[in-house]
Length: 160
Image (cartoon, rainbow, N blue to C red):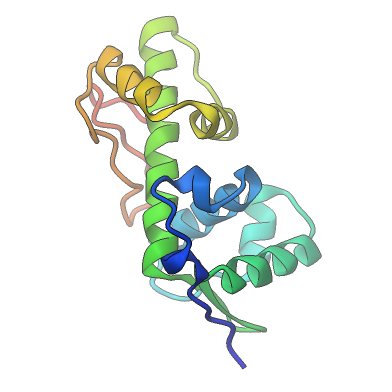
């Protein structure tokens, strides 16, 4: 039986960090990235490999995120993001992109995806907006990873 609740649709949160904890968001971003490469369900092993965590931890997180209404999960069939889960994953990825683009452009530091994610998660919205501007972008300038899996940031054609 599939787990597919909709708590996230009624929680009233207006920003991703209000709906998901940092590690939950990291899983959503990973699922979104993996799923962008193909239209199939994302499997436990794929997420386990990308995040370098045990498959049992991935299964536990899948169940938790499904109970929150952020993905559809069927054991042995994998997961797909719900519309709300995809929205949160894209916003968190956009925040990560803004942080990484700023640091790359202003300091020359090529920050890891995980570090960019963790910084982007804790910064207030105003700070993310300011980083976007300082990195040469505009509001909502970062885009999601395209289907070919190459992450591109619109800030002067740099990769995020």
